[in-house]
Length: 60
Image (cartoon, rainbow, N blue to C red; front, top):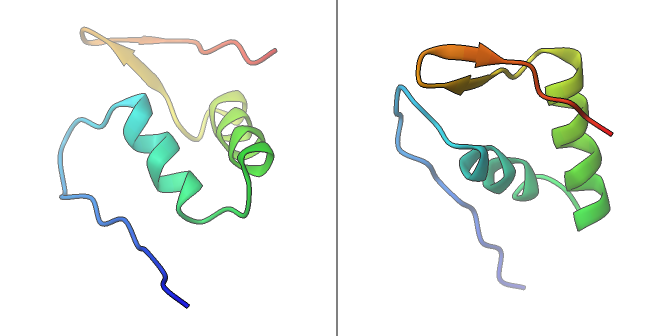
């Protein structure tokens, strides 16, 4: 069985796509990925930055 692991280079700024990629490499399916990313954003453990201003991410 072939397993693929995604390794990200350490950077000071990561994109939302990087977050989704990192989470999806640890989850079983897309529903679990969406739920985990929504929880991270909703709980405030991950913050979204827009040109130096932190913006509140609304999770519906």
